[in-house]
Amino acid sequence: MKMPAVKRGEVWLVDFGLAAKVRPALLLTDNPADEELDLVTVLLHTTALRGNQWELAIPKPFLKPGAFHLQQIQSVPTVRLEKRLGFLHESEMNLVLEALAERLTM
Image 1 (cartoon, rainbow, N blue to C red):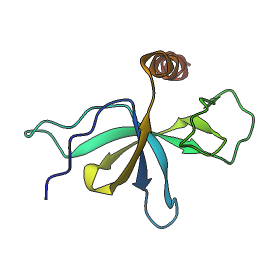
Image 2: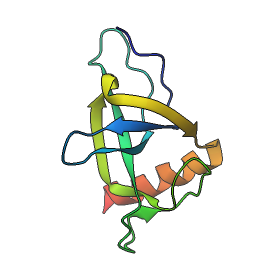
Image 3: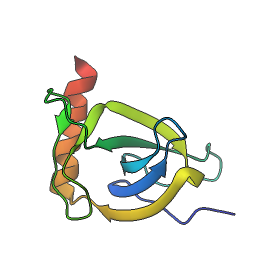
């Protein structure tokens, strides 16, 4: 069964397996093309905040208070995407991309 189209900037509940459980994650990539692996790259959202520089809080009504954790980037099969929760606006997505660029150049 083919997954419905997914888009960069959407936030989904993702099944990360037994240890990491089901949690929200931001899609950093669009729906994979037919010739690509059926994977999307995501940024995990956490409510277990540690107060470090790699936590980016973007409050949304569909998320519990917490932050996207810039150290937790993963690629997951689209079959692990369980439910679309909402999306980030372009300005919010730009904040994420700027913070990720800083993270990846350090």
